[in-house]
Image (cartoon, rainbow, N blue to C red; front, side, top):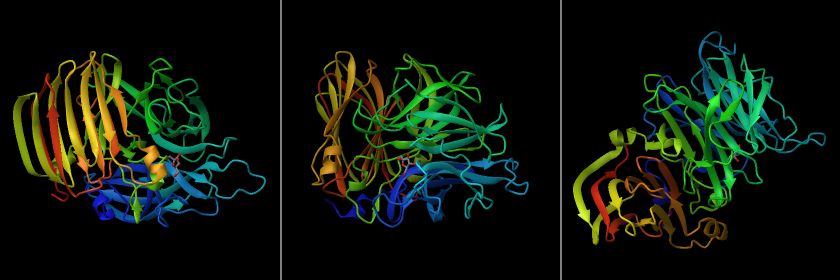
Length: 486
Ligand code: FRU
Protein backbone atom coordinates (compact mmCIF):
# COMPACT_ATOMS: atom_id res chain seq x y z
CA UNK A 1 0.00 0.00 0.00
CA UNK A 2 0.98 3.62 -0.44
CA UNK A 3 1.74 5.98 2.44
CA UNK A 4 -1.56 7.37 3.73
CA UNK A 5 -0.80 10.92 2.54
CA UNK A 6 -1.32 9.63 -1.01
CA UNK A 7 -4.89 8.64 -0.11
CA UNK A 8 -5.98 12.00 1.29
CA UNK A 9 -8.48 13.30 -1.29
CA UNK A 10 -7.59 16.53 -3.08
CA UNK A 11 -11.11 17.89 -3.42
CA UNK A 12 -13.36 15.72 -1.31
CA UNK A 13 -14.07 16.67 2.28
CA UNK A 14 -12.16 14.58 4.83
CA UNK A 15 -11.43 15.24 8.51
CA UNK A 16 -7.99 16.56 9.43
CA UNK A 17 -7.72 13.63 11.84
CA UNK A 18 -10.07 11.10 13.41
CA UNK A 19 -13.12 9.25 12.17
CA UNK A 20 -15.92 10.57 9.93
CA UNK A 21 -19.21 9.05 8.83
CA UNK A 22 -22.58 10.56 7.80
CA UNK A 23 -23.03 14.15 6.60
CA UNK A 24 -25.20 16.01 9.12
CA UNK A 25 -26.87 19.41 9.31
CA UNK A 26 -26.27 20.43 5.69
CA UNK A 27 -27.60 23.96 5.51
CA UNK A 28 -26.86 27.21 3.68
CA UNK A 29 -26.97 30.56 5.50
CA UNK A 30 -25.54 33.98 4.80
CA UNK A 31 -23.22 32.90 1.99
CA UNK A 32 -21.86 29.78 3.70
CA UNK A 33 -22.53 26.12 3.07
CA UNK A 34 -22.36 24.29 6.39
CA UNK A 35 -21.21 20.70 6.58
CA UNK A 36 -21.59 18.99 9.93
CA UNK A 37 -20.69 15.34 10.14
CA UNK A 38 -20.57 12.31 12.40
CA UNK A 39 -17.16 12.63 13.98
CA UNK A 40 -15.01 10.82 16.52
CA UNK A 41 -11.87 12.86 17.14
CA UNK A 42 -10.36 10.33 19.57
CA UNK A 43 -9.53 7.57 17.07
CA UNK A 44 -9.83 6.72 13.40
CA UNK A 45 -12.51 4.08 14.02
CA UNK A 46 -16.16 4.72 14.99
CA UNK A 47 -16.55 5.90 18.60
CA UNK A 48 -18.68 8.23 20.76
CA UNK A 49 -20.27 10.47 18.18
CA UNK A 50 -19.73 14.23 18.00
CA UNK A 51 -20.79 16.63 15.25
CA UNK A 52 -17.74 17.94 13.40
CA UNK A 53 -18.17 21.19 11.47
CA UNK A 54 -16.78 22.86 8.36
CA UNK A 55 -17.91 25.71 6.09
CA UNK A 56 -17.35 26.54 2.45
CA UNK A 57 -18.38 29.14 -0.08
CA UNK A 58 -17.84 26.87 -3.12
CA UNK A 59 -18.59 23.34 -1.78
CA UNK A 60 -15.04 22.26 -2.63
CA UNK A 61 -12.62 24.03 -0.33
CA UNK A 62 -13.66 23.67 3.29
CA UNK A 63 -12.60 25.50 6.45
CA UNK A 64 -12.54 23.27 9.50
CA UNK A 65 -14.32 24.81 12.50
CA UNK A 66 -14.44 23.68 16.14
CA UNK A 67 -16.59 20.66 16.97
CA UNK A 68 -20.26 21.73 17.13
CA UNK A 69 -21.91 19.10 19.34
CA UNK A 70 -20.28 16.84 21.92
CA UNK A 71 -21.73 13.91 23.85
CA UNK A 72 -23.22 14.82 27.25
CA UNK A 73 -24.93 13.06 30.16
CA UNK A 74 -27.93 12.25 27.91
CA UNK A 75 -25.78 10.51 25.32
CA UNK A 76 -23.89 10.73 22.05
CA UNK A 77 -24.88 12.94 19.12
CA UNK A 78 -25.98 10.74 16.25
CA UNK A 79 -27.02 11.94 12.80
CA UNK A 80 -29.46 14.72 12.07
CA UNK A 81 -30.05 17.93 10.16
CA UNK A 82 -30.13 21.71 10.45
CA UNK A 83 -32.49 24.37 9.15
CA UNK A 84 -32.67 28.14 9.13
CA UNK A 85 -35.44 29.37 11.43
CA UNK A 86 -36.57 32.34 9.36
CA UNK A 87 -38.43 34.92 11.42
CA UNK A 88 -37.75 33.10 14.71
CA UNK A 89 -40.72 30.75 14.64
CA UNK A 90 -39.16 28.84 17.51
CA UNK A 91 -38.86 31.90 19.74
CA UNK A 92 -35.25 30.90 20.50
CA UNK A 93 -33.56 33.81 18.69
CA UNK A 94 -35.08 37.04 20.07
CA UNK A 95 -36.91 37.78 16.81
CA UNK A 96 -33.91 37.22 14.52
CA UNK A 97 -33.12 34.34 12.16
CA UNK A 98 -31.14 31.47 13.67
CA UNK A 99 -30.02 27.90 13.04
CA UNK A 100 -31.82 24.88 14.47
CA UNK A 101 -30.12 21.48 14.56
CA UNK A 102 -31.90 18.22 15.31
CA UNK A 103 -29.81 15.21 16.24
CA UNK A 104 -30.38 11.83 17.77
CA UNK A 105 -29.46 11.53 21.41
CA UNK A 106 -28.03 8.01 21.69
CA UNK A 107 -27.53 6.96 25.30
CA UNK A 108 -24.31 5.03 25.77
CA UNK A 109 -25.23 3.43 29.06
CA UNK A 110 -28.84 3.05 29.98
CA UNK A 111 -30.13 3.13 33.52
CA UNK A 112 -31.77 -0.18 34.44
CA UNK A 113 -35.30 1.14 33.93
CA UNK A 114 -34.70 2.48 30.40
CA UNK A 115 -34.95 0.11 27.46
CA UNK A 116 -34.53 2.24 24.37
CA UNK A 117 -31.47 4.42 23.86
CA UNK A 118 -32.49 6.78 21.03
CA UNK A 119 -34.51 10.02 21.18
CA UNK A 120 -34.49 13.34 19.28
CA UNK A 121 -32.68 16.40 20.56
CA UNK A 122 -32.62 20.07 19.51
CA UNK A 123 -29.69 22.50 19.58
CA UNK A 124 -29.69 26.10 18.35
CA UNK A 125 -27.19 28.70 17.27
CA UNK A 126 -27.60 32.47 16.92
CA UNK A 127 -24.13 33.01 15.39
CA UNK A 128 -24.19 30.96 12.18
CA UNK A 129 -23.20 27.71 13.80
CA UNK A 130 -20.09 28.91 15.68
CA UNK A 131 -21.67 28.22 19.09
CA UNK A 132 -24.49 25.85 19.90
CA UNK A 133 -26.81 25.57 22.89
CA UNK A 134 -28.60 22.31 23.55
CA UNK A 135 -32.28 22.92 24.27
CA UNK A 136 -33.06 22.58 27.98
CA UNK A 137 -36.23 20.57 27.28
CA UNK A 138 -34.38 17.76 25.44
CA UNK A 139 -35.36 15.25 24.26
CA UNK A 140 -37.97 17.03 22.13
CA UNK A 141 -39.29 13.61 21.08
CA UNK A 142 -38.81 10.78 23.55
CA UNK A 143 -38.37 7.23 22.38
CA UNK A 144 -41.70 5.65 21.35
CA UNK A 145 -40.59 2.12 22.34
CA UNK A 146 -38.29 1.27 19.43
CA UNK A 147 -34.68 0.17 19.27
CA UNK A 148 -34.09 2.28 16.15
CA UNK A 149 -35.45 5.83 16.37
CA UNK A 150 -32.93 8.15 14.80
CA UNK A 151 -31.60 10.51 12.12
CA UNK A 152 -34.18 13.35 12.09
CA UNK A 153 -34.52 15.52 8.97
CA UNK A 154 -36.39 18.76 9.74
CA UNK A 155 -37.67 21.44 7.38
CA UNK A 156 -40.31 24.19 7.31
CA UNK A 157 -43.37 23.26 5.23
CA UNK A 158 -44.92 26.48 3.97
CA UNK A 159 -48.36 25.12 2.87
CA UNK A 160 -49.16 23.64 6.29
CA UNK A 161 -47.22 26.28 8.26
CA UNK A 162 -45.51 23.55 10.26
CA UNK A 163 -42.05 22.17 10.82
CA UNK A 164 -41.88 18.61 9.52
CA UNK A 165 -39.57 15.88 10.81
CA UNK A 166 -38.91 12.59 9.04
CA UNK A 167 -37.07 10.10 11.20
CA UNK A 168 -36.14 6.40 11.26
CA UNK A 169 -38.83 4.31 12.98
CA UNK A 170 -37.34 0.83 12.77
CA UNK A 171 -37.75 -0.27 9.16
CA UNK A 172 -40.06 2.64 8.40
CA UNK A 173 -39.88 6.42 8.33
CA UNK A 174 -41.94 8.38 10.87
CA UNK A 175 -43.40 11.78 10.02
CA UNK A 176 -43.91 14.30 12.82
CA UNK A 177 -45.02 17.96 12.78
CA UNK A 178 -44.57 20.96 15.01
CA UNK A 179 -45.72 24.59 14.98
CA UNK A 180 -42.94 25.88 17.28
CA UNK A 181 -40.00 23.52 16.54
CA UNK A 182 -40.09 22.26 20.14
CA UNK A 183 -43.39 20.38 20.60
CA UNK A 184 -43.92 17.57 18.14
CA UNK A 185 -46.92 15.43 17.16
CA UNK A 186 -46.79 12.14 15.28
CA UNK A 187 -48.52 12.28 11.85
CA UNK A 188 -47.91 9.00 10.04
CA UNK A 189 -45.35 6.46 8.95
CA UNK A 190 -44.26 5.20 5.55
CA UNK A 191 -42.33 2.18 4.40
CA UNK A 192 -44.00 -1.08 5.30
CA UNK A 193 -43.91 -3.23 2.16
CA UNK A 194 -42.30 -0.44 0.09
CA UNK A 195 -38.85 -0.52 -1.49
CA UNK A 196 -35.81 -2.42 -0.22
CA UNK A 197 -35.50 -3.74 3.33
CA UNK A 198 -33.20 -6.03 5.21
CA UNK A 199 -33.45 -7.05 8.85
CA UNK A 200 -31.79 -3.83 10.00
CA UNK A 201 -33.35 -0.39 10.33
CA UNK A 202 -33.78 2.14 7.59
CA UNK A 203 -31.45 5.08 8.23
CA UNK A 204 -30.93 8.77 7.45
CA UNK A 205 -34.19 9.75 5.72
CA UNK A 206 -34.42 12.98 3.74
CA UNK A 207 -37.62 14.44 2.24
CA UNK A 208 -37.78 17.35 -0.20
CA UNK A 209 -39.85 18.79 -3.01
CA UNK A 210 -38.33 19.00 -6.48
CA UNK A 211 -39.61 20.30 -9.81
CA UNK A 212 -40.07 17.84 -12.64
CA UNK A 213 -37.68 19.10 -15.28
CA UNK A 214 -39.43 20.84 -18.16
CA UNK A 215 -42.84 20.75 -16.44
CA UNK A 216 -44.71 22.93 -14.00
CA UNK A 217 -45.37 19.99 -11.67
CA UNK A 218 -43.26 18.92 -8.75
CA UNK A 219 -42.86 15.74 -6.71
CA UNK A 220 -41.54 14.85 -3.28
CA UNK A 221 -38.46 12.65 -2.98
CA UNK A 222 -37.90 10.50 0.07
CA UNK A 223 -34.33 9.24 0.42
CA UNK A 224 -33.62 6.33 2.76
CA UNK A 225 -30.47 4.42 3.65
CA UNK A 226 -30.73 0.64 3.80
CA UNK A 227 -28.22 -2.13 4.42
CA UNK A 228 -28.83 -3.99 1.22
CA UNK A 229 -28.33 -7.60 0.33
CA UNK A 230 -30.56 -7.69 -2.73
CA UNK A 231 -28.32 -5.65 -5.01
CA UNK A 232 -24.79 -5.73 -3.70
CA UNK A 233 -23.97 -6.28 -0.06
CA UNK A 234 -23.33 -3.23 2.07
CA UNK A 235 -24.82 0.19 2.69
CA UNK A 236 -27.13 1.46 -0.05
CA UNK A 237 -29.25 4.53 -0.65
CA UNK A 238 -32.72 4.19 -2.15
CA UNK A 239 -35.31 6.81 -2.99
CA UNK A 240 -39.04 7.05 -3.51
CA UNK A 241 -40.86 9.47 -5.83
CA UNK A 242 -44.22 10.58 -4.48
CA UNK A 243 -46.44 13.21 -2.90
CA UNK A 244 -46.51 14.81 0.52
CA UNK A 245 -49.44 16.73 2.02
CA UNK A 246 -47.86 17.88 5.27
CA UNK A 247 -48.76 14.69 7.11
CA UNK A 248 -48.49 11.71 4.76
CA UNK A 249 -46.07 10.57 2.08
CA UNK A 250 -47.53 8.46 -0.75
CA UNK A 251 -45.43 6.50 -3.22
CA UNK A 252 -46.09 7.13 -6.95
CA UNK A 253 -44.54 3.78 -7.91
CA UNK A 254 -45.63 0.26 -7.10
CA UNK A 255 -44.57 -0.81 -3.59
CA UNK A 256 -42.11 -3.35 -4.97
CA UNK A 257 -40.27 -0.78 -7.13
CA UNK A 258 -36.75 -0.24 -5.79
CA UNK A 259 -34.92 2.88 -6.97
CA UNK A 260 -31.24 3.16 -6.07
CA UNK A 261 -29.83 6.64 -5.83
CA UNK A 262 -26.34 5.31 -6.48
CA UNK A 263 -25.25 1.94 -7.86
CA UNK A 264 -21.77 1.79 -6.35
CA UNK A 265 -20.62 0.67 -2.95
CA UNK A 266 -19.73 3.96 -1.35
CA UNK A 267 -22.52 6.54 -1.31
CA UNK A 268 -24.43 6.33 1.95
CA UNK A 269 -26.39 8.41 4.46
CA UNK A 270 -27.13 10.87 1.66
CA UNK A 271 -28.47 14.23 2.73
CA UNK A 272 -29.39 17.36 0.76
CA UNK A 273 -28.61 20.95 1.66
CA UNK A 274 -31.41 22.92 3.28
CA UNK A 275 -32.25 26.55 2.58
CA UNK A 276 -30.40 27.02 -0.71
CA UNK A 277 -31.57 30.46 -1.92
CA UNK A 278 -34.41 30.39 -4.43
CA UNK A 279 -32.33 32.28 -6.98
CA UNK A 280 -29.93 29.32 -7.02
CA UNK A 281 -32.66 26.72 -6.69
CA UNK A 282 -30.44 23.65 -6.86
CA UNK A 283 -31.01 20.50 -4.84
CA UNK A 284 -27.51 19.56 -3.71
CA UNK A 285 -26.74 16.20 -2.16
CA UNK A 286 -23.77 14.73 -0.35
CA UNK A 287 -23.07 11.09 0.49
CA UNK A 288 -20.69 9.49 2.96
CA UNK A 289 -18.16 7.85 0.64
CA UNK A 290 -17.88 4.56 2.47
CA UNK A 291 -19.78 1.45 3.42
CA UNK A 292 -20.37 -0.05 6.88
CA UNK A 293 -18.96 -3.57 6.26
CA UNK A 294 -15.44 -2.21 5.78
CA UNK A 295 -15.55 1.46 6.78
CA UNK A 296 -13.46 0.89 9.91
CA UNK A 297 -10.77 -1.00 8.01
CA UNK A 298 -9.83 1.33 5.16
CA UNK A 299 -6.08 1.68 4.65
CA UNK A 300 -5.49 5.01 6.40
CA UNK A 301 -4.53 5.47 10.04
CA UNK A 302 -4.65 9.05 11.34
CA UNK A 303 -7.96 9.89 9.59
CA UNK A 304 -10.62 7.76 8.04
CA UNK A 305 -13.34 8.42 5.44
CA UNK A 306 -14.38 11.25 3.16
CA UNK A 307 -17.55 12.63 1.63
CA UNK A 308 -18.56 12.21 -2.02
CA UNK A 309 -18.31 15.14 -4.38
CA UNK A 310 -21.55 17.13 -3.95
CA UNK A 311 -24.13 16.20 -6.59
CA UNK A 312 -26.85 18.34 -8.10
CA UNK A 313 -30.04 16.28 -8.28
CA UNK A 314 -32.78 16.79 -10.85
CA UNK A 315 -35.98 14.83 -11.55
CA UNK A 316 -36.58 13.95 -15.17
CA UNK A 317 -39.19 11.96 -17.07
CA UNK A 318 -37.81 8.68 -18.51
CA UNK A 319 -39.39 5.64 -20.18
CA UNK A 320 -39.51 4.07 -16.71
CA UNK A 321 -41.17 7.07 -15.07
CA UNK A 322 -39.72 10.02 -13.15
CA UNK A 323 -36.14 9.34 -12.12
CA UNK A 324 -33.46 11.27 -10.27
CA UNK A 325 -30.50 12.38 -12.39
CA UNK A 326 -27.12 13.47 -11.04
CA UNK A 327 -24.53 16.05 -12.02
CA UNK A 328 -21.26 16.78 -10.29
CA UNK A 329 -21.53 20.33 -8.95
CA UNK A 330 -20.70 22.99 -11.53
CA UNK A 331 -18.26 24.63 -9.07
CA UNK A 332 -15.85 21.82 -9.91
CA UNK A 333 -15.36 23.32 -13.34
CA UNK A 334 -14.90 26.89 -12.16
CA UNK A 335 -12.47 26.29 -9.38
CA UNK A 336 -10.51 23.18 -10.11
CA UNK A 337 -9.91 22.58 -13.76
CA UNK A 338 -6.30 23.14 -14.69
CA UNK A 339 -4.16 21.92 -17.59
CA UNK A 340 -7.40 21.74 -19.43
CA UNK A 341 -7.31 19.62 -22.56
CA UNK A 342 -10.02 19.12 -25.06
CA UNK A 343 -10.15 16.33 -27.56
CA UNK A 344 -12.91 16.10 -30.15
CA UNK A 345 -12.79 12.89 -32.12
CA UNK A 346 -14.60 10.05 -33.67
CA UNK A 347 -12.68 6.90 -33.09
CA UNK A 348 -13.84 3.43 -34.00
CA UNK A 349 -12.59 0.12 -32.73
CA UNK A 350 -10.53 -1.93 -32.64
CA UNK A 351 -8.23 0.59 -31.12
CA UNK A 352 -6.57 1.66 -27.99
CA UNK A 353 -8.09 5.09 -27.73
CA UNK A 354 -5.78 6.95 -25.44
CA UNK A 355 -3.48 6.78 -22.47
CA UNK A 356 -3.84 9.71 -20.12
CA UNK A 357 -1.01 10.29 -17.70
CA UNK A 358 -2.38 11.78 -14.55
CA UNK A 359 -1.42 12.41 -11.00
CA UNK A 360 -3.88 12.37 -8.15
CA UNK A 361 -7.05 13.78 -9.73
CA UNK A 362 -8.71 13.71 -13.13
CA UNK A 363 -12.08 14.47 -14.66
CA UNK A 364 -13.01 12.92 -18.00
CA UNK A 365 -16.13 12.98 -20.14
CA UNK A 366 -16.81 10.60 -23.01
CA UNK A 367 -19.65 10.30 -25.49
CA UNK A 368 -19.85 6.67 -26.63
CA UNK A 369 -22.05 4.45 -28.70
CA UNK A 370 -21.93 0.68 -28.55
CA UNK A 371 -23.32 -1.86 -30.96
CA UNK A 372 -24.35 -5.25 -29.68
CA UNK A 373 -21.38 -7.31 -28.44
CA UNK A 374 -18.99 -4.38 -28.37
CA UNK A 375 -17.36 -2.89 -25.33
CA UNK A 376 -15.38 -0.03 -23.93
CA UNK A 377 -12.80 -0.71 -21.24
CA UNK A 378 -11.29 1.93 -18.99
CA UNK A 379 -8.31 0.84 -16.93
CA UNK A 380 -6.51 0.83 -14.65
CA UNK A 381 -7.92 3.50 -12.40
CA UNK A 382 -6.25 3.05 -9.05
CA UNK A 383 -6.67 -0.70 -9.33
CA UNK A 384 -10.22 -0.38 -10.67
CA UNK A 385 -11.44 -1.23 -14.13
CA UNK A 386 -14.73 -0.24 -15.76
CA UNK A 387 -16.04 -2.33 -18.64
CA UNK A 388 -19.14 -1.29 -20.51
CA UNK A 389 -20.53 -3.97 -22.83
CA UNK A 390 -23.60 -4.05 -25.06
CA UNK A 391 -25.16 -7.49 -24.81
CA UNK A 392 -28.59 -8.63 -25.99
CA UNK A 393 -29.90 -5.09 -26.12
CA UNK A 394 -28.69 -4.28 -22.65
CA UNK A 395 -25.72 -2.34 -21.45
CA UNK A 396 -23.77 -4.07 -18.74
CA UNK A 397 -21.33 -2.13 -16.61
CA UNK A 398 -18.76 -4.14 -14.72
CA UNK A 399 -16.61 -2.50 -12.08
CA UNK A 400 -13.66 -4.75 -11.37
CA UNK A 401 -11.39 -4.35 -8.43
CA UNK A 402 -7.94 -5.79 -8.23
CA UNK A 403 -5.77 -6.57 -5.31
CA UNK A 404 -6.24 -7.79 -1.79
CA UNK A 405 -5.14 -5.63 1.08
CA UNK A 406 -4.67 -8.22 3.77
CA UNK A 407 -7.50 -7.09 6.02
CA UNK A 408 -10.27 -9.67 6.00
CA UNK A 409 -13.24 -7.36 6.56
CA UNK A 410 -11.97 -4.97 3.94
CA UNK A 411 -11.13 -7.61 1.34
CA UNK A 412 -14.34 -9.56 1.81
CA UNK A 413 -16.45 -6.41 1.88
CA UNK A 414 -14.95 -5.18 -1.37
CA UNK A 415 -16.21 -7.55 -4.06
CA UNK A 416 -14.04 -7.77 -7.09
CA UNK A 417 -16.72 -7.28 -9.66
CA UNK A 418 -20.36 -6.49 -9.97
CA UNK A 419 -22.73 -5.83 -12.80
CA UNK A 420 -25.25 -3.08 -13.39
CA UNK A 421 -27.76 -3.41 -16.21
CA UNK A 422 -28.27 -0.03 -17.75
CA UNK A 423 -31.16 -0.54 -20.16
CA UNK A 424 -31.33 -0.52 -23.92
CA UNK A 425 -30.19 3.01 -24.67
CA UNK A 426 -26.84 2.49 -26.38
CA UNK A 427 -25.70 6.03 -27.01
CA UNK A 428 -24.59 7.56 -23.83
CA UNK A 429 -22.26 9.81 -21.94
CA UNK A 430 -19.79 8.79 -19.28
CA UNK A 431 -18.40 11.25 -16.78
CA UNK A 432 -15.64 10.16 -14.46
CA UNK A 433 -14.11 11.87 -11.51
CA UNK A 434 -10.97 10.32 -10.10
CA UNK A 435 -9.48 11.59 -6.86
CA UNK A 436 -6.70 9.93 -4.93
CA UNK A 437 -8.84 7.14 -3.46
CA UNK A 438 -12.14 7.29 -5.30
CA UNK A 439 -13.76 6.66 -8.68
CA UNK A 440 -17.08 8.45 -9.23
CA UNK A 441 -18.97 7.76 -12.42
CA UNK A 442 -22.10 9.28 -13.97
CA UNK A 443 -23.63 7.40 -16.89
CA UNK A 444 -26.15 8.56 -19.49
CA UNK A 445 -26.37 12.26 -18.62
CA UNK A 446 -26.39 11.44 -14.93
CA UNK A 447 -29.20 8.89 -15.04
CA UNK A 448 -26.96 6.47 -13.13
CA UNK A 449 -24.46 7.37 -10.46
CA UNK A 450 -21.79 4.88 -9.35
CA UNK A 451 -19.51 5.86 -6.48
CA UNK A 452 -16.64 3.63 -5.40
CA UNK A 453 -13.60 3.91 -3.21
CA UNK A 454 -10.37 2.69 -4.80
CA UNK A 455 -7.07 2.62 -2.96
CA UNK A 456 -4.21 2.23 -5.42
CA UNK A 457 -1.28 0.09 -4.38
CA UNK A 458 1.08 2.16 -6.47
CA UNK A 459 1.19 5.79 -7.38
CA UNK A 460 0.68 8.69 -7.19
CA UNK A 461 1.24 8.76 -10.97
CA UNK A 462 -1.36 6.84 -12.97
CA UNK A 463 -2.24 6.08 -16.56
CA UNK A 464 -5.83 5.89 -17.66
CA UNK A 465 -6.19 3.73 -20.75
CA UNK A 466 -9.34 3.48 -22.86
CA UNK A 467 -9.79 0.51 -25.20
CA UNK A 468 -12.58 -0.36 -27.60
CA UNK A 469 -13.69 -3.53 -29.33
CA UNK A 470 -15.35 -3.70 -32.77
CA UNK A 471 -18.68 -1.88 -32.86
CA UNK A 472 -17.78 0.62 -30.17
CA UNK A 473 -17.32 4.28 -31.05
CA UNK A 474 -16.18 7.18 -28.93
CA UNK A 475 -17.46 10.38 -30.47
CA UNK A 476 -15.96 12.82 -28.01
CA UNK A 477 -13.55 12.86 -25.14
CA UNK A 478 -12.65 15.74 -22.90
CA UNK A 479 -10.51 15.69 -19.80
CA UNK A 480 -9.11 17.92 -17.13
CA UNK A 481 -6.29 17.32 -14.74
CA UNK A 482 -7.52 18.76 -11.49
CA UNK A 483 -5.60 20.99 -9.16
CA UNK A 484 -7.21 22.23 -5.97
CA UNK A 485 -7.32 25.92 -5.16
CA UNK A 486 -7.54 27.16 -8.75
C1 FRU B 1 -25.75 5.75 9.46
C2 FRU B 1 -25.76 5.71 10.98
C3 FRU B 1 -26.96 6.49 11.51
C4 FRU B 1 -26.51 6.90 12.88
C5 FRU B 1 -25.04 7.16 12.66
C6 FRU B 1 -24.18 6.86 13.86
O1 FRU B 1 -24.50 5.57 8.89
O2 FRU B 1 -25.79 4.37 11.42
O3 FRU B 1 -28.17 5.77 11.49
O4 FRU B 1 -27.19 8.03 13.35
O5 FRU B 1 -24.64 6.36 11.57
O6 FRU B 1 -22.87 7.31 13.68
